[in-house]
Image 1 (cartoon, rainbow, N blue to C red):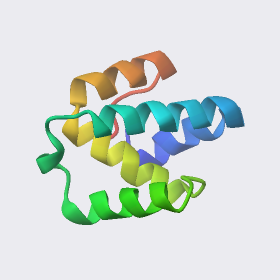
Image 2: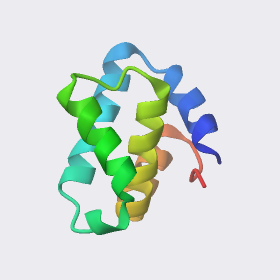
Image 3: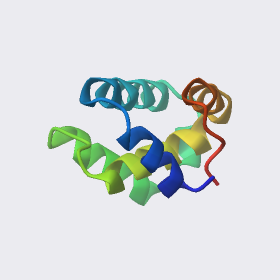
Image 4: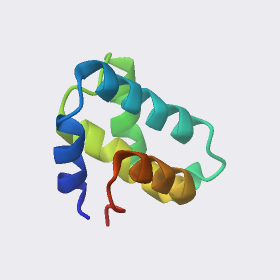
Length: 89
């Protein structure tokens, strides 16, 4: 599944559920011991979005999804399973 397809799935969530999902992804990423696996440019985009107050744009959520899928694939798969989705990439 592509990240675009994953974004289609989360667009169908309520604003509250979407916000909760973004928070969960951020928590997973920030607690990961595998952050060195995330490309620097992706990390900086996520950092900037967080500091500026949000992940309202799909592009930024896509970067977060990509980073979590790299740093914590098992935890990410669990989220996909909960959403009834497949692994993006």
